[in-house]
Length: 266
Image (cartoon, rainbow, N blue to C red):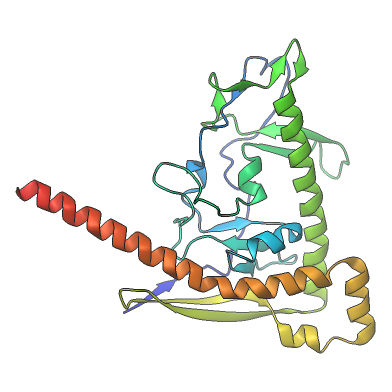
């Protein structure tokens, strides 16, 4: 049996991932707002693709395949599930899988730095006011009209993530200009014998990279683009990890369903 996963190679983003609404964080309007650091990652449970930066490649590649979006500026995404709307890294209780890397886009939610206006270098802290981690429970973001230590740490982390994303945009422009991407597919066999065939996703083509002229190759090295390319190649071995996780989840779901049915007939 072969299961076809559609559109895995065509991730797009209309607004920041996970955000339902956008609101600028205001020290007066949100003076009583708190951030619950124990709220978990349930908000990420229904996506199989998560945007990442090239600075994350060395961490992501050990556990997740990396693919690129279509469009004028291709951007990298970590594949965290084989089926659309299913994240194999988020457990039933909302926790992230033990000892698995949590992408920056997940770690920073529900905070993000966005330009105060189009093409502006000035940014403001923006939140998702509908996030379950924001409310009356947790650590305060403001005290006596000033930002608290936890908000300062959040801003610092989101600043690093934004800087990484800007570098990643430049990387995406470069690989598009050099035509380094190619379409490919992969077939995975699960423990129950079923197969997943995933087609039409974009990857870096090692042959195209290898055939680049010496001056281009040296330029990539100088720009810091060469290392992410090599790190990316490692991620192609991570498809088998996802297949194992999908197999484990199916077996667990089957066992739970059988136990429920047995209890109902007892």
